[in-house]
Length: 130
Image (cartoon, rainbow, N blue to C red):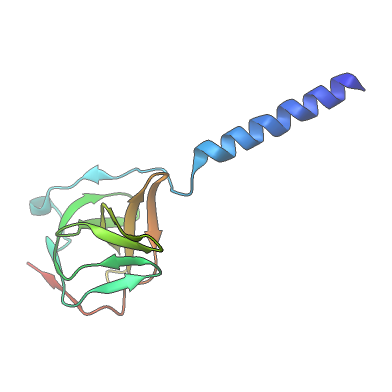
């Protein structure tokens, strides 16, 4: 019985440790993209500030920077901001455009746990720019 208890403690400890280090973000598989060699527009203009939950995306010109198997990542012209009880926290982030449907926009933000997609920005006031 002591060996079973010790095995259980080790298994629970390993699970807790893995959970703590996994964070809430996903694995980042983005690769740099050359706007001249892709069919995706090089810019998205966000005409008005928009937000997804507590993450605020400033208006301005977002530039195509990276891509992965699922879509394209347009970097914000500055930081995106997370509204907290203590004020605004700046983060890297921008707009994610689905490869399958370019009308499907989401926000993305780089958090301490990794890259996280947030919200649905498809109804934001935006325009693709060439």
